[in-house]
Amino acid sequence: MADEVVLLDFWPSMFGMRVKVALALKGIKYEYKQKNLRDKSPLLLEMNPIHKNIPVLIHNGKPISESLIIVEYIDEVWNEKSPLLPTDPYQKSQAKFWADYVDKKVQPNGRKIWASKGDDHEMAKKEFLEGLKVLEGELGEKPYFGGEKIGFLDVAFIPFYAWFYTYEKCGNFSIEEECPKIVSWAKKCLEMESVSQSLSDSEKIYEFVLTRLATA
Image (cartoon, rainbow, N blue to C red; front, side, top):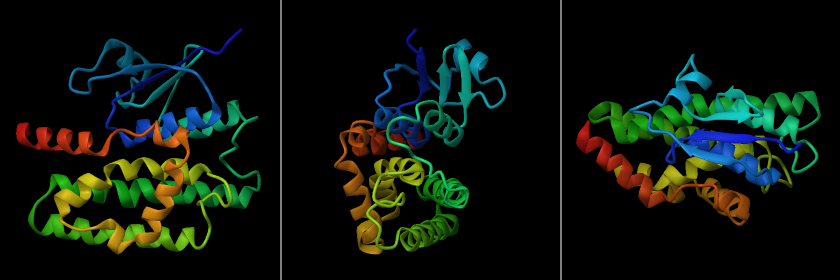
């Protein structure tokens, strides 16, 4: 019997894009259901009653929430193709640590770049770029964070590239000038169709943000 896989998502979400990248790398077919977060559907509330948020992966009727947990679940369930997490326990712990770092350091400051003003805005830019430079150090000379092949941290981080245009426009700076290794890594990831076709359009995201700011 074929697996029934459904993804509840909201198209600009970098967290939803993570799941799309993981599913694409594994070659998993799924049904995509777009959700309006300002008018949450009964299905979303039923499948994620705690956080009431996307993404949610529904696998054979069972919901899995939180994007990094979903990506790890996908990797464990469909482990015969494109393994994302290392088998070595220490290396696995490091991949998870850095993915958590992205969520705690990169994402909040990225959001503040477009959502805040004044001193908060300037501090967010500074801390955002500091976070990227730390990640450049972790990348080192490897082609991917996962080594020779794309891995868990690459999947966790690459969706933010779709938001770089928004951060740059709202922050008036160039990420490529400040963190060239991160941009060249992202472009390498985008050479994979599984990745490039799973990310939302950067300019559309920027338009979405402008609309949201105008109606805030």
